[in-house]
Image (tube, rainbow over all chains, first blue to last red; front, side):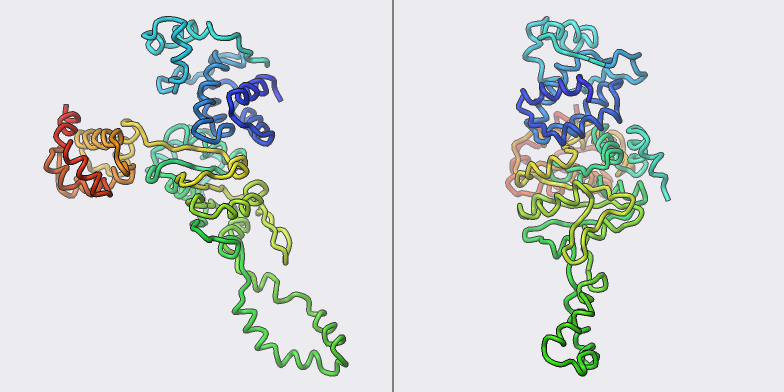
Length: 129
Length: 312
């Protein structure tokens, strides 16, 4: 299993999402199928496999946004699809986002603003592939 | 026969095919079906009533041209109604008919032990395939080319029943003591479970499924759904009625209207030849979308402000 995923699952467990070994295996299969290229696709897929209650889904969203900060996690060329989708639920981070910049540019700033702002978070492991 | 492989090749393709079957879905829903198909996992669908949980299973079976087998759950549902049953009547009838034959078999047998021994030679014919009545779960496993198995409203069944499902959900097989383990045909069924959240589903069951939560749709999606389901409604009316419903969902009601109610309402307004919402029209049709007198009264008192708001 690749390290990115095992690290991500560890961070989920720390956020009180109960992930069993069987579910970890499901996540591995899902990632094999979906890949790391399309961030939104990856998020929606893992959201079906790992969190199983409303609370867990919320924690998952926060964790995912935090963990996979960069769109192209694999380090390969960005895929053709538009990943910077406006309806990405990101409300969970507004709390942490406050320290980065003014709240106004949280959304409007789009990709650039988002990155700059989140860069202030704890140094997360990313893309070990 | 639909080409399942090509329909399920990507999330976009699934979404398109759902749309052509008039089921407008979010990417999340299409992704769930995509994963369910490729990972061969059941989907547990939760969400408020009337958002299209059951419809998703139905449309999938239609879209993939697979037969649909449905198991409606209720309190007291047990093995004999869900998995299999022995045809007791037939067993009884056969023993009656075979009575005479039995005399022949036992003819000349000396003593009890020998009679029993001769009977044993006939084995367990009364507990064989011939006398087995397969119920939905067993039937689904035996479908040669796969099928869609819908286990509807699992939260209505007893807690114990969930445990019965574990074997079929994780291994696509069922153990029947008298005839052994029945494994799925080469193509396992696509399993959809729905729940209205009236009680918590056990962890063991959740662990074996993909978990999909279908919320109420946003304005945009709901408009698309109305457009697909009731295309005769004009764009402006569609916009108004969807906004009205969305406003209602924000109120504190006993039961907020779901998509099925929006569709019913659109059809009602169509019948009345309405082309715009006005307070009088809404008041007279409110019973289509609200199912509690209390709710109706609450909304009536705020009718003017809501209609004014959505007509802006």
